[in-house]
Length: 116
Image (cartoon, helix red, strand yellow):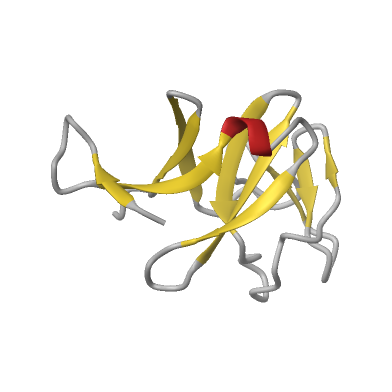
């Protein structure tokens, strides 16, 4: 997928994630970075959320987890994460990095988390 620099920061790239029309409410898909990392993209009630596709507990893929409202469950061990904050509901210090989802002209773009 093409990578597009943002207007405000030429050194920050956005990752193309497909068309809005291809991800209806309740839909999900994996998007891959140029380095091969997978990102889970979800449409929950018309709002888009993106997070690293790896549970911080043991690295399990989150892609097959049940999403109830804004809470995604890890299919491996049942840990639950709020997809709006990335925080585990039982242990808030455990988080999944989130990507900002931008909608531009009917297309979805992912902005990587800021590294600290």
